[in-house]
Image (cartoon, rainbow over all chains, first blue to last red; front, side, top):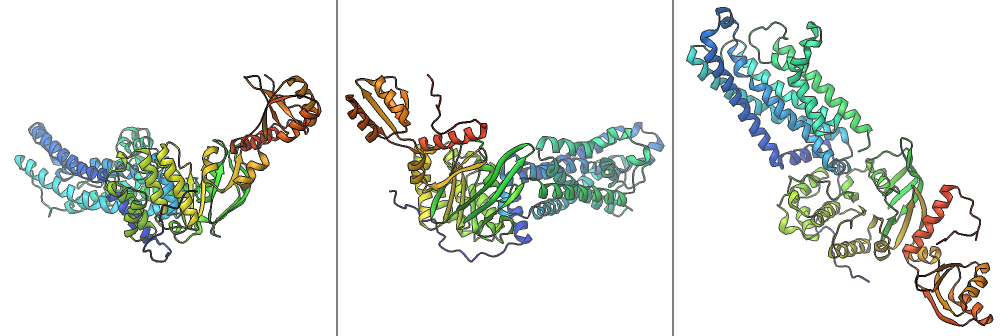
Length: 271
Length: 313
């Protein structure tokens, strides 16, 4: 008979202790930070957003002389410089989608749920970690975009300053908006479970709702996630958009709905 | 220790696991044998609380899996070696698992060493061969030093070295007093690795016994015979319960009578025997015999004892 050739017993291991939600948070954080793609995506989101802000501001500068006085009066330089919020939301939102769909794709979700049977806790941890990463990343992005935009728009003597009313709020709310979109992304990922399907759904929600929103009555359009995301960075009131504070609230409702629906489904479904 | 009690799982109209009751005991390797699609993986997923039983219960170490305070410390499982994110390193994969169950990080290096992956611990899993993935999956199962281990088809796709390695590991784990539950559709492998077998077919348990007893009790004894008046011998033996099968080289294989009985009949009737060879019963024979009954039962065929089993052509 085969002689035992293995010593699989642990040399040193403390007695087992009941795990808590804190352990789930730590484990999910380890998971996210040990993937190189996480940091590539975060870096990509920052660069793409700031680059886009520069591009749009430069386009404005080249258009400026052709604009009518009323168009110039309606021009919102802060909101224009923060256009990258849409990009950051799309990119970090799809990172959130993949935080769960990639586990379904490989089958690792079964490893996760056998290590951590409290599935709602897993989803909560993912949601909290993604939102917590997204907020400072988007904040830095917004500040960089703002100052880059100011440099470019200064060419046409368009004044921008953090001290102007509503500007700091737009930068903060923009970051909050991005952070909340990660919740929407994670929720859609948990509900749909396929990367392609959930990413498409997220893009339709964040970018596409301006397009197909036309099908809705005008009063309802502003509550679409894409329109709300557009509204969070506005300094001047724009017809058909919610005030920024309310828009953040609307996004928060979407994020909570998405994550709690996913949480319910995941707890009920077979893994 | 794993205890399944009237465990049942339906997927819509399909019955994947049908009223299954069994106990997997510590200190030995218990094989979970059945053809693909018999319900092995579904049963294992229910043990781990991944799939919810339609009815019945399954307990691990006396508790429902989902109620275990630190599951990896009680149960280690490898369901699918490829179910790991390819972008993470082996050590980091084990690291998040350790963190999730409050297992000391030092154990990560320990289990990497046990499975022989110490040198590639910081390599990304995407660069691993299937064999290395299997080893990593086993390292993950051993991480919490659990008393109960569950492996679903662990030797699938492994080379002979890898198979031998897994076989020795399973035996070592059992000799350390752990409960080892291992599924396979390969009977030959089970014969060499398992002490005890639970045989499943179409979602039902069709045998639950030691490997030796399953072979002895269920494999038909086959005897190869060549005789001078072969047709006469067949005519004499068939009424006694033997089924004859003609072999390609002209010999006849009898099932249902042993060599002593055949020899005696030949002697009393003056038939000279050229060859009389009892063929060794294997687990494969036993398995085919077991599933053969299962199929008859399922098909609802009216098969009386000893009724002509159509072994035509």
